[in-house]
Length: 283
Image (cartoon, rainbow, N blue to C red):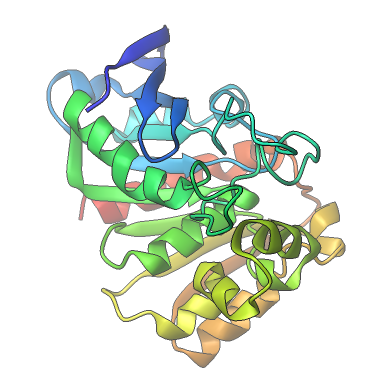
């Protein structure tokens, strides 16, 4: 287990907002993550919500723009926000594009030679980070939820489907629902996974729904109707909805009138999502 390094801590709604760094073995670099500890965590262990951010984000964006701390304090939920990719690996080309490489890990484990040593965000988020959090903070290991925004929404849906039973509840804001069929996803998947489209299906929520064999699970998704990327066919929520209907998988997709792809959208509905997760985690 790597050593914990507290970069910052701030009192917030009676709890504590921290930013932590540690050496990651799965990513081969130093990683940062945010963690909000609600007031209730001072007296005992609490459920945990992992929140995955989107393209170009880091561990700071959600805690500064998401507005989640008040609801997390009210419902007694720890929120963990990992970075969106490895940092400082000095891989040729990793900072050339905003939608690939640094800030764009897509929460998968790369198989291509150039990337497979470091770009293992699936392993990091599902194995290494939870072990680190459970060992160092008052988290209840079997009461875990996951959510995310945009690329992180893709991560939340996909990780839940690939790891049956790991997460009791799942939600997403404007997720990339069918990445193998949109420009962002095609670019990322071809770079990290190579040209074989069959291998892409293992990292695409719309494809994975048909293969899911785990405990009952429901997706709660919010999508803004004025989201520019929704209009540009980057997100494709209808494809996921159709796959869920075909496979009798429960999915509630709410199309929100007037909302775009910004964190103002996330901030508007984050309390509803945290309440939703709390009801399931504490049932």
